[in-house]
Length: 182
Image 1 (cartoon, rainbow, N blue to C red):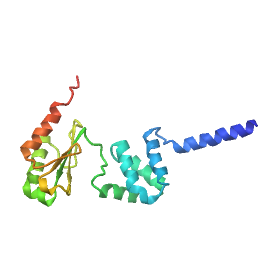
Image 2: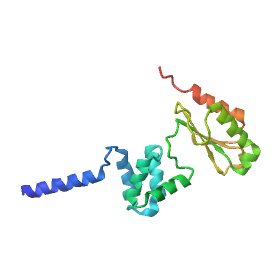
Image 3: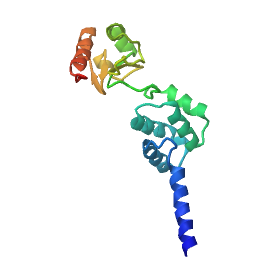
Image 4: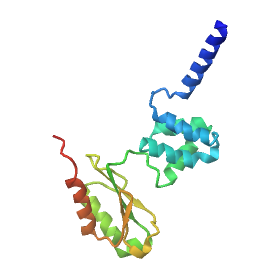
């Protein structure tokens, strides 16, 4: 009887050790739920990457390798998908995100001027985050909001008919609302 109980304890311990990530980061358990819900199917890669980014904030190398191992895919394929789609990011995002549409309609109506003004004002380029980690600047190929061009997405909310001045005003509001670090 005692050997059966020990055997059951060992089996449970093996399951737990297999499920746990070596780092002890509990976010991997959340990711495991999504992977298991999709039965470790390789064609669920994009859904798994979306969940990973939601949980971790970005897709760093260790997360991509974990996903590749769990879905039994080559790491190069997982990296290729993560870098192909602009909604995936390999770097941590800032507290706020500003996405400028670079589609044809937005570009013709001044999207390029907005980008230049933001890069100069923030001292960063597209795809970067300010040194204080406050603001990330990105572009999107097309937001599908051509009727309100030029469009900018501030923390997930689309704003139309933007100008360099209106965008910089919004950025300054974010910076002014930042709690002091004292």
